[in-house]
Image (cartoon, rainbow, N blue to C red; front, side):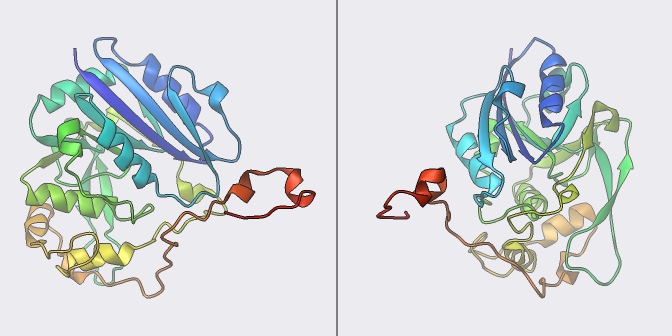
Length: 280
């Protein structure tokens, strides 16, 4: 029996509880599964998430989901770690497929499509098309919605807490290529995704926050993510895309580097009647 820690994050995800329920119902029963859910939304929905560790995050919170991921990975003592971003509906015996597919090797299982990179001239982001696949396929590219590997390997992945949404695919894929860690995608039929953070009218944090650090990394320029320049050509050769063609975002909107939450925010109507002496 293997042990698996599942980390699920959702931003205002309407069907998040249903996707987690499906995950629990479709596990094989032959592995020990622990699930932690970070639910960033308006209301605490703890009653909808039975059998998991639930954390409600304020909808307008500015702390990066990757900060929560880093903390959870650091304290994890399970054999494997699965990161899920958003509503992912897994098929029956999904855990058997992941553990058997991994086979104790130093690999990553991520995504469920083949990847074809966009070779057009003008680019700020890494873009590509998805193609359905019928069997596990080596892509050497991380999918930001679904990432599975040994916990030991996950603990070596770069700290991307400076990012908010964009950038995990490029940084994780680059790190894997530099460390000879192959990345495989599951057959498309093994799961389906639903919804996106961009389905919401307003997102309080900037999805592109600090993304130009990613561009600097891909151009082999020292920065806070990779202080020492790395050979990006290794990844380019694996996936067939020249990352040097990417340009920095001209109007990058970075979030503040500190948590703006204050004790005053936790007070109800008494904040307007009492004699507050501090705001921190």
